[in-house]
Image (cartoon, rainbow, N blue to C red; front, side):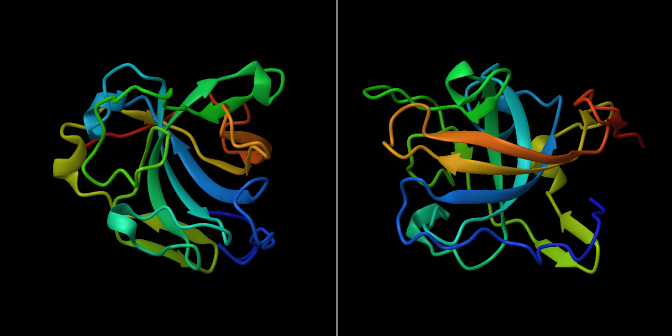
Length: 181
């Protein structure tokens, strides 16, 4: 993704607590099925995101990642509790155990924390997803979005809402990008 200014230069401020904290992200919503990366199928919009959140860690296996931009797969769904027409990262209801990728960080969200090589340099954000992770990708559609998310202050569903859209490459989330050979 090419951005205006220096990629990754702007970051959310530290709040010192998880509830009410901010997440800033570069996101690629895709037409891939959520099942293609290890979630149950047909759970919502599968998006690859590169995020920064200085108030908490959500790396796989208890790792630390609050100090660096890092990748996630997330499943996005609409939720009016986040605002009119807004999206959130899909919550995992208490008492349920959906299928999750091996690098799920154990939070009650449909989120994965893979360790793909991620670079933010000059005006470019790049994530190298191994081809074997998602299989055949010809024809997959995508878009590019820069956004902010907010952890709900009372930590109840919805836990993580998209609170601000800074820019959408297509202007309308129509997923105009298409992977070809």
